[in-house]
Image (cartoon, rainbow, N blue to C red; front, top):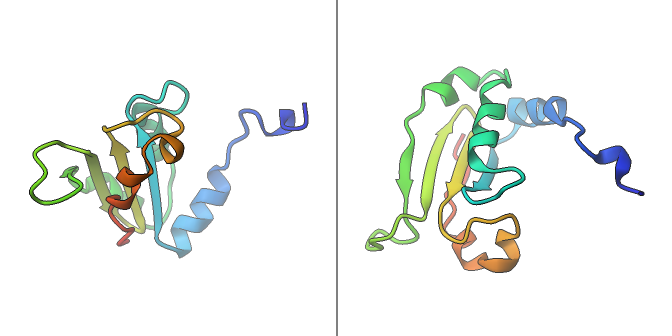
Length: 111
């Protein structure tokens, strides 16, 4: 019951402030049933910050753990202080616990 006040609370104002001032890296797992990639992408489209136009027009690129890796790890889009990665491999909610190695391949936030 202690976390009840945090349930379904928006952090859009805080994220907008961060995106307006710092490079930010966000990631989602494509198989996450609670906050999956499609939900996150719709959410990001509604946020307005100084770089939102650059992010919205940025191309999505394939992300692999290494250049020679034949398997796609996910997809990345970057622009306007935001790098967003949708992870395909081992992409349920507890990605840090299930497959932390895959997070080492996440692109850095380039802004």
